[in-house]
Length: 247
Image (cartoon, rainbow, N blue to C red; front, side):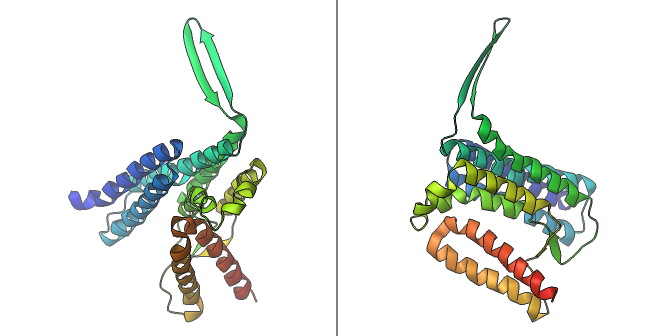
């Protein structure tokens, strides 16, 4: 019984990590949000790994995994983007409604709601992924966990002393709108991105090796601010691989 539920327990840890990451994102504890987002993604990897290892894959596990992912890799980056819009100076409005002595009071920045389009794009990506039965050596579009890491690590990147001069250019509504729609596009486009795994063919193995080396260098230089640039480098490497493969 325990063996059968190990993947579901790990998936539950993914969900819990996502909930904590959402809280920290809302509270502007961006570094803590990144840590718990990464933990959720690690649990997301482990649940699939143990489901296959123990041969206990199930439909319940599949749907529980998607529900957890929509929090960790969909809702959390949506909150982060909303907060980035808010920090960029978009106008916030206060609303007070009285309905038969029932008071509704809240504040919201309407333009910042654009950030939650990432959540919708992630949900669509996850739903589409669940309809794919074939196992391939590549991803179709940017996986939601990678997109989540990219968005959630933006605050750490723009607050790093090496990139502090870029902060005014990134932290403005126009740039944030471009980043939002670019992430949605990259998640849902039919574009091959290589999987990070061991390949027998060195011509394929070279790409994960280059990504690993580049990641180590960035971590040494930027710490948690490295994640956003690692995802960008991953996209560029996949682009190079596709160009070489098609020639």
